[in-house]
Amino acid sequence: MHTINQFISREALDSKLSDEVAAILAEAVRIKGKASIAVSGGSTPKGFFKALSQVDLPWEKITVTLADERWVNIDSDASNTQLVHENLLQNKAQSAKFFHLKQGELLSDETLVDLNLAAKTDLLPLDVLILGMGEDGHTASLFPCSDEITSALAIDNPNALMAVMPKTAPHTRITFSFASLMTSKNTFLHISGNAKKDVLDKALAGNDKFVMPIRAFLQQPDINTQVFWAE
Image (cartoon, rainbow, N blue to C red; front, top):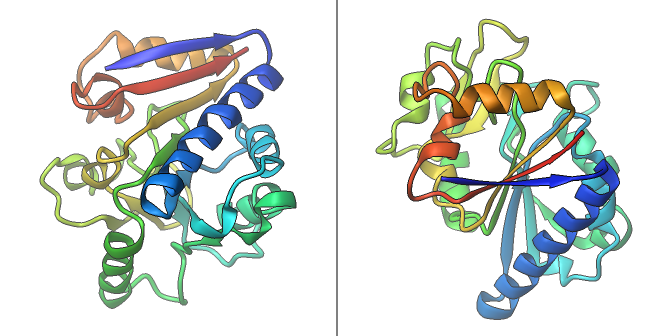
């Protein structure tokens, strides 16, 4: 299921989203002493990152990670880890912990085993998940073109993290599986621009999640995906 929240400007969206996310994280820390949030990369969330970084929170008790990451060096322009460090883990959020998805040189089976154990122990279930969406309807690195899409969307996938090699985008990826992401207590889809609104409308008009994986989040009865959109 989903709810669409439309804003008159991207700045208004960023402000409202940062307020809502901050309130959720603060409450999670109050109840259980810690909180976790997974964010997405790209240019869309930069304003949100900067707004959230200015909020007074017990950041030292909050762990930030990515919904997915390209297996590239952190100094690469393609690194979402670099994006998060430069835009979110700044200002008041400098003391937050960061859970690196890209660890080491090779995305080996052994690396995945170690990362899965750490994610299940330290992160999951997420308190907040911020998703993005590609023009093909992919989200995180759940790509419709990939050979891994069936297992990536399987609700009984025991793996929190998995390797994906998309056929229509560069770089091997590491991504949280749908089975792990669907357990997030609060899920947001953050998009902007008319082109992404057209993609959203197309996703809502059909049912095949293997064609547009974002449908898994928009149409799953157990998930209340809050769509935040501004032109």
